Image 1 (cartoon, rainbow, N blue to C red):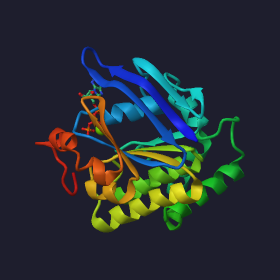
Image 2 (cartoon, helix red, strand yellow; image 1 turned 135 degrees about the horizontal axis):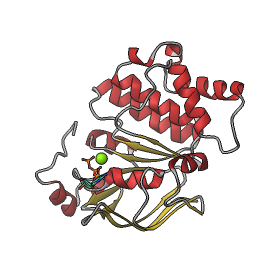
Image 3 (tube, rainbow, N blue to C red; image 1 turned 135 degrees about the vertical axis):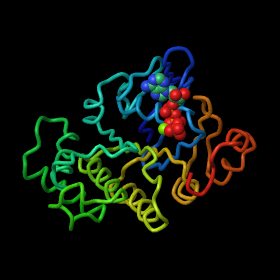
Length: 247
Ligand SMILES: Nc1ncnc2c1ncn2[C@@H]1O[C@H](COP(=O)(O)OP(=O)(O)OP(=O)(O)O)[C@@H](O)[C@H]1O
Ligand SMILES: [Mg+2]
């Protein structure tokens, strides 16, 4: 089943297009990596899907309904969650309170009963392995744990589609593997579809089932990782850019 359908989506900031006519279909349960050089338009594309930025042109359909140009909170209620690279946690709240907020954001039918939000938050914290830190302040978590907290916040809202923007940057090998395992588990156990922007090629090769390469706002190649990353057009696009181990 097609979950997400982009049709000729464009974004202009002033003159040059940041995203230049992207058409893409994503099936339920896919883990799709979106890669490409710096400035290729990857973050902009995710932000248009999640409602953080309206498209200049084109259509974005999610579960058959148009979401292009809707407000972020509306898109969130329809089942699309996004984790940005910079953690947006509430510092003055505990870990658990942060995730409760996430559970509330994901609900379309008014306010969730407190007990349900709490249960969903605890479940999500358990999912990312942070159950033992529930009552601590967010400031006690390291970068890797804060990324997991962001993931838990998104998952607590029970999304159908999860958009991840470089959530694995700067992690060591152990943390990287833990992150890969959690994203895979979210798909396998919760049925979440994942679109994931990533520079860490090691992670892309081990987790992604499909890779889409953006270059100058356009889809350059779309296919399985082993083939895509050997494509001459992709190698050329990355010349002089970072395609290393830790991006
Ligand atoms: N709010 C904005 N206003 C003006 N230009 C923008 C804005 N956001 C992005 N751009 C421009 O749009 C282009 C695409 O940016 P985007 O952040 O989507 O790239 P990216 O592929 O995510 O790059 P990176 O890998 O460095 O994160 C860039 O040229 C960028 O400078
Ligand atoms: Mg980006």
